[in-house]
Length: 421
Image 1 (cartoon, helix red, strand yellow):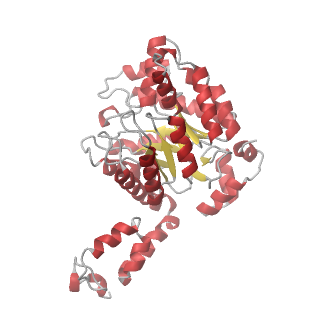
Image 2 (image 1 turned 180 degrees about the vertical axis):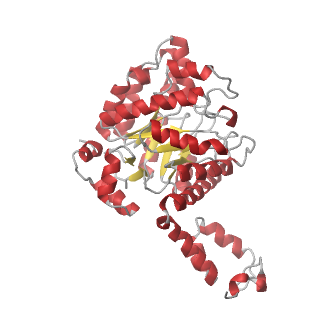
Image 3 (image 1 turned 90 degrees about the vertical axis):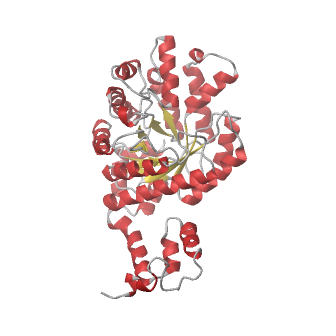
């Protein structure tokens, strides 16, 4: 039995105990929400890592995407990005590699990382087809199931599966005018397969077979939003909402087969739509943890999309989203480098914590209170220790070596903190 099926029988696993202690919530409350599918725990049965809880009443988690492209695949670079993500506070990693030896890259990341690892198996399927010079229309469910089984055995903790891209949801997508069409790589691959073959998406048709593999290894299914909006113009259209309805139904089926579920969400979305989108997901998907990319609240900031994503992420998480996929400054421009990864994680961690002040109250705000007291005391060492990026905070101050110990160069002797009121 996996930890989900055990929990349904009242068995409190070591993973549940760890998350309860880590999050400072009673294990009985955690068990209830876990069984109801409102919390997932990321940890493949074959991994020797600390489990990570995602969902109701838990701290908002941040994922960092790394991985190669057909134009650039260097394993040392990916390991450097992995370490930068871990050092910056990421809670999980996704390997989105599409270039080089994908199996070797994934195994190396699994070996080097202490964090849960996610993948998108359809990427490997497409890469294998291309290497074998087979047309995409030849892709079969047998190809896909073999990849899912292989990755699960290796220790992958969660997988994005685009089973919500169906003939019906793609038809809904085309019933309204989009600017950017399908921007999900996995979604576009499967929509093209449906179009060429005039058949149903095999990841939908053979969904139960996928679940059987995931249940065996305690792999969480992250139901991919293959029709997510790629521009603020396209947000909350028929295709996106139709797919979310399907994902809610698929989530229920997964739980019945003892597979934990995360629902993936947008994407690009105007500020005023975010809260409604979160509420809709929680209603349609029975409270399943919501994993959002950003969302990016404007399309005009290439080079600064870690900021547009953090703005949307803070609003989304405060409204109830549980898992933020970071966005880097390189989004829409190129493969991110190590600095992009670091900046992306920090921006999303700030967004996550800002939201947790709203969701978790004093459990989260105690960190801010410690920083505030250190500022009042002009205790620079303590300020650095409480900074989300200690090195940057310290380097900024040390750039002005003439500063006195009891003031900074902003206000100097007129520092308000030096006065008692």
